[in-house]
Length: 168
Image 1 (cartoon, rainbow, N blue to C red):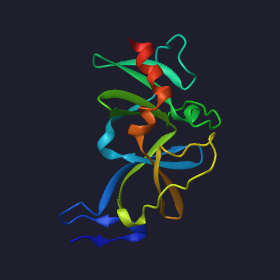
Image 2 (cartoon, helix red, strand yellow):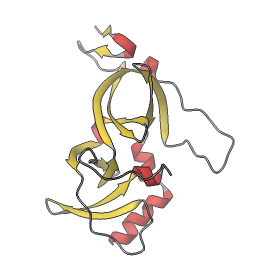
Image 3 (cartoon, rainbow, N blue to C red):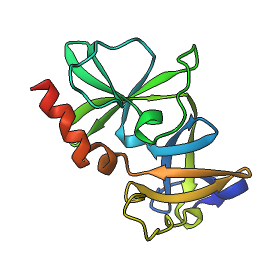
Image 4 (cartoon, rainbow, N blue to C red):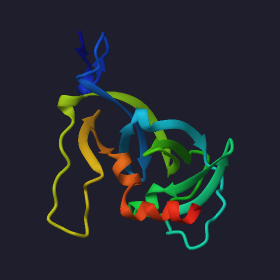
């Protein structure tokens, strides 16, 4: 049986059907979350090898134990102000759609188990220029809004196909 904790956290005593785990991270002033099952590892930032003619959000590639991994900066992808790369900057290595991809974020915060009933749907906007299809929901955790990303949809979007083309 699950016991609710503060702000929608859940103590696990059996089935996990009523909750989901997210790795939370920061981009600028905002907090984001991605499903923990998509995360392969978390690494410190290292400067990747640049790829000619790649979009600006693709920083390049790294060799991760013999696997060539494209590295993209989510700050640039989301049109946030450019942040400096420092000791807190990390790369989240993801396994999505059968490929390994790295995402640069400002910092990793925590792994949270959220009750599904505190996750609210993403708002819909009537604008072609503002797309929320990669946002699965929003949750409030300890007075801060957490934006939950569908990292699979984000990484397999039309502009991400350029990563595959640049590598092959």
